Image 1 (cartoon, helix red, strand yellow):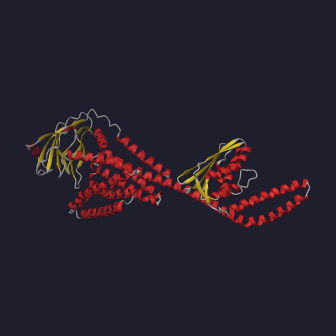
Image 2 (cartoon, helix red, strand yellow):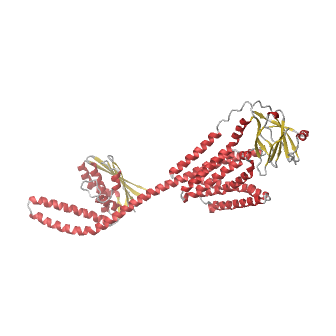
Image 3 (cartoon, helix red, strand yellow):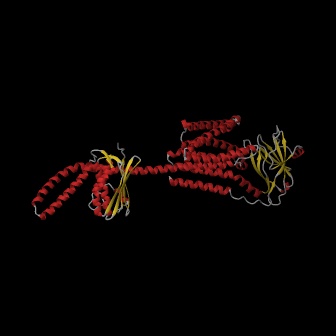
Length: 631
């Protein structure tokens, strides 16, 4: 999963870099023959007649001069159309052409002295026109007339470029490719995500699919909002408008669904309820769209109210709701909420700033920065989903580690249980004949000469050793603590230190004990001493000469922590992993039972033991017991 997410992140980065590289590429130098037409004349008409001839237009008396950077001419009350008169300059070489970068109107005609040279009559509600108009040299020095009809924004609102057709064609494509590139990149990412969803588990599918729909619908909205498709393939304009509306109907509930999958259902399931409402309302709008299409736009006003005014209101409510919840989580320190809030803030600043400028310009301005805000916001959403996937991966790894530890502990418990049963069943039966044999050997020792006594004494020692092993087996098989009292850890270690210091001195080692007076635990004194004598004896034997053993203790989080650290030979990881196993020992004649018994004693006293060791450096043993406040 981690490799998959890395590959997906690389794909997104490459897509964004490629898009930015294309869009930020320096435009080609302006051709020497390319000219900018910055002024023209405008006249308003009460009725728009595309068949009006040039002489009738020339005869009109109310022409007014307009410059490209001036505010849009105020539309007279009752005016239905507008005519624009432009003088064509001389174009020295090449195939002459005119590039109208922005004309607002649903019905646009262009006339010259030779008659009609262009007409576009749109039956759908999209009024931005970008026109690349081929000309011939015979039209140079003459005037052309542009007739425009529109119910809202109307007129020529940007510079007109005159020059060679090929050069203007490159300019036309570059100026209009931005939206197409951004939208296509988003759609490409969404398609890749859909393919990748085949490899996801069910618990990740909801957030992944929701984000996929958000990116796909956003990309479609960006493309279908652009004038590029309408300029090149205007006959499919109705399809583009329908795709824009459908994408909006998909975007809003998908966005809420993604938010819900990341941040939860919200207070009293408010996010879930709003998401269900949005799904229902989107289905209602789609149904109303179908009815309007089948009735040949007879219900257009109702559809426009539902898909325009009302859905805009619901968008405002949605953003306020989601941002409020994200802000609450941000205040609480939720990292995903912080990323969401930052991404949405970028989108909101760009969108609201452009919207204010749009109204200041009396709506004669095309919004475009919002698309970059959408891209930034989507990147924030992708980061949130990526963090969620990474966290899920870490949880899976952690669960795997815990499962491995659990399995190891289970195997150890099963092994210990088998040994316990075996020890309990055999130990008593073996000890009785050993005691009898030892008694007869003692009688023989008293009657034999000195030479035989040596061998008989050796036999007795081995019998005692066998008896000690059986005692360890019994202790392991039945690890009852016995009489439980409150133990003062310092007092217990004073006795342990007195027993083991002579042994340490013989080895050339030293033992230092630093334990406070006020540490108390529950347990059996003799078992406690047996366990720690076994541990410290192992430390002494690991010194192999001079060395030090430090013992210290303290209370932490309701536990008494006892540390025993030596400067002995240490152990590698393989040996550490096998400590406590029966019959495993680093000693030549060791059975491993001593440390095994120690583990069981500590376990019965509700303690925990942990070893840290490094070969050639030493070993540290940490034992933790529940602390007791001495009354």
